[in-house]
Amino acid sequence: MIPQASRALPVWREPAAWSKRADLVAVLIAVSLPWSTSLVGIFGAVLLVVIAPTLDFRFFLQSLKRPISALPIALFALALVGTLWSDATWGARSYALSPATKLLVLPLLFYHFERSTRGMWVFVGFLGSCTLLLVLSYGVAFDSRLALKADAYYGVPVKNYIDQSQEFGLCAVSLTYPIVTFVRQRKFALAAVLALLALSFLANLAFVVTSRTALIAIPVMSLTYVLLHLRWQGRIVTLCILAVLFSTAWFASPRLQERITSVFSQYDQYKEFKQATSVGLRLEFWRKSLGFFAEAPMIGHGTGATRRLFEQAAIGQIGAAAEVIGNPHNQTLNVAIQWGALGVLVLYMMWLVHLLIFRGDDLANWVGLLVVVQNIVSSLFNSHLFDFHEGWMYVLGVGVAGGMASQVGGYCNAHQSAKALNRGFLN
Image (cartoon, rainbow, N blue to C red):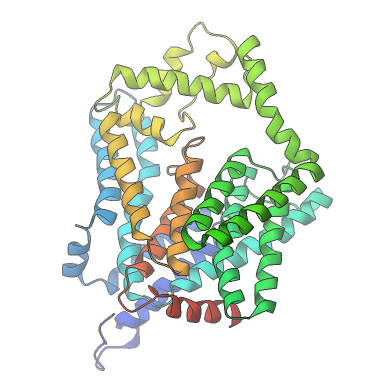
C-alpha cells in the first residue's frame, strides 16, 4: 500500500493525496473515452504528472522487469529502433511511432492500481459514460439533429460506428459477471436492472449500429465467460439463451441481416470485378501485406514504411488494387510489415502474458480478460492496438484491471469483488 505521509508534509505533497488525484484522472479518461479523443490525450498527459509524486522509484523500476510491463515497453522500443532502418520520411516515421507510445502508460497503471483501492471507479465511470452514449444513440436514430457532429452516421452521435460498437460490446458482455453475482446474492432487482442494460447495449448493436467486427468479438467473449465461469449445466442453458437471442435478433433486424449477408456480395464484387468494397479492400490489403512481409521477414521494412510500400504496389493498378493505405487493417500484419517476425513475436508474447494475468475469479479479472480477448479478436480485422480509441481501451482496461488483479488481499477474491460491486453500483 502507499506509505503514510509525514505529518510535517503539507496536504498537496502527501503521496496519498496525489494517489487519489491519479485515480480521479483515470476516471476522467474512462468517462471521456467514448466522447472525445482530445480530452483523453489531455487527461493522459495529466495522469503522468499526478502519478509521478506517488512513485517509489526503486520499486517502480523493479516492477518494469515483469513481463506484463517489459513487453509493452519492448514493443515501443522496437518501434523506436525501427525508425533507423526505415526509408520513409522522418515525418512518416514519427507518425507511425506515435500509436505505440500509449503502451508506455501500461506499466504506470499496473504499478498505481496495485496500490490503489479505487480501480472500480474507473470501470463504473466507463460504464456510466457508455450508458449515456447509448441513450443518445437511440435518440439520434430517431432524430439525427441530436447528434453532436455534422453528417452523423445513423445512430452514432460522436466518433464512428466501429468505436461505438466496441464500447457497447465490451459493456454488454462485462455486465454478465455482476449480473450472475447479484443473482447468487439473491439481489434480483439489481440483477434485473443490469440485465436490462446489457440487453439494451445488445439491441443497439443489432437494430441501430451494427459492426461486423463486434458481431464476431461478442460471441467469442461470451464463450469465454461460458467456458471459464459456468458448469456444464450452466453452459448448456447459457448457450441456448444466446442462440435464442441471436435468432430473435436475426429475424427481427433487417439491418443485422444486411450487414452479415453483405460480406458475400462484397466478396463477389471484389473477386469478379476488382471493386473496392469493404471486404475486398481488406483482402487486397492482406494479400499485399503478406508479400511485403516476405520481402523482409526478420526485422521488417522499418517504422512508417507501410504507406510507401502500398504506393509502390498501386502503380499501374485499378480498382481495389490501386488503393493506398498506411494501415493494412490487421494488427499482426501492421507489425509484421514494419518490424518483421521479431515484432510479431513481441506482440503475441504481450497478448499472452496479459491474458495470463487474469486467471482469478472476480470482476477485475473478468473485465481485464475481456479487454484482451476483444482486442485480439478485433485486431484480426483492424489494427486496434494502435488505433487511438481501441488502443486506449486496451491500455486503460488492462492497466487498471491488471493492477487490481495483482493486489495481495485486495480484489483478487470473490468476497472482495462482491463488496466492490456493491460499492460501485449502489453508492
